[in-house]
Length: 271
Image 1 (cartoon, one colour):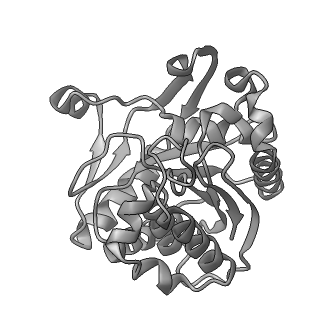
Image 2: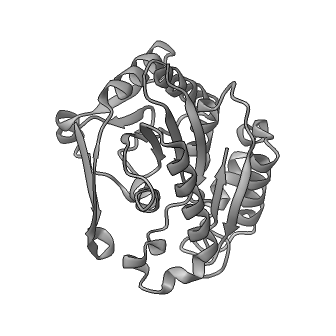
């Protein structure tokens, strides 16, 4: 029976990839150090599969999407670094088990195969929400299959229940797993931030980081909607799925780093 060996919150700013940052990544050195520590921790755990939860794959209003090609590929050509590329085996059996358990729970979960890609005009390639953490992981450890999950715009409690379905799917497998919640925090920390400044940005980031550090996870399901909206975040739903996957596990959370050098909050934590 498979088990979850660890779970992590990681950001996904392409600029921290040195081939993209070309020196600018040094402004986010705390984040880079945290990502490298996560990669080393994963190497020590040696999971057979890594599940990535991302905001930047095919996203549906009312459903969760799991990529369903046999091999998942991607590169950083959108960020002028086409030479940085990835190709990973997709754990299709685990993807199907997760979909089955989710649908039994009344959570619509779609397997995005080439036919669905064509029907909805969506991409089945790896996105930067997955490739940025993968870039650091692969420097330490490469012997793993993946499952690529894009959260849907569902209520937090439903995403938590989906995370529990992820855990059930893993328990059906022989391989152990780790779960990566990919997401940046507020995009509105400073006046020159991508989405402009809002004072709620700092409040949101402090609340999320402190709630994880103190494992007060109920707080992350009762945040005022206007706080999340004003903060301009993209990581909360990834975290909510991750928390569901950790349900019932004895967790020792540790925040490895937090900073916002470009007006966007980057948090790295392990559970």
